[in-house]
Image 1: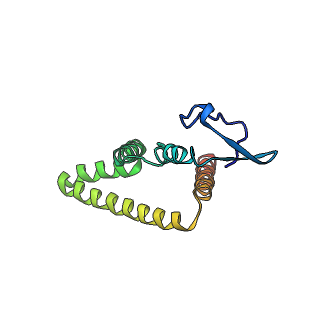
Image 2 (image 1 turned 90 degrees about the horizontal axis):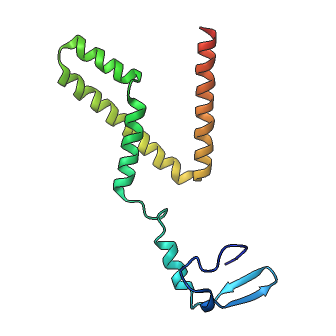
Image 3 (image 1 turned 90 degrees about the vertical axis):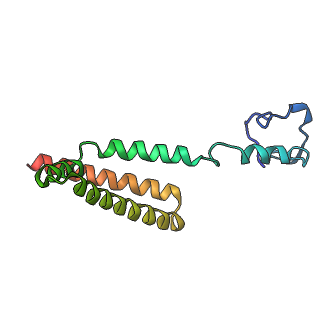
Length: 142
């Protein structure tokens, strides 16, 4: 493990218990006495263990806020008003949203097995930028 300028007591072990053995002037090996403690800290890190409730809540809030007032919601509102069958429209729109969400999750899982998270993040950013430019061009032309 390389230590540059990180504090040595980050694992909760007093610095007096840490023994360092230099291989060369830039490299130190931690002794086995503290290795299990460091592994325990890494295993308990919040980034490695997100609860399903947090993921569910974040997903729900993000999608809910993104969908409020969009064309899908307005279309559903108009269909419900025209058909006078709000529950049938609700079932149809709910089934459509569930199906598109399922496709998104399956495609996202497939992409995650083939691309790194950084590549996916950059690709999503580029796609959103392209969509924004297309919308801007459409507004500018119209």
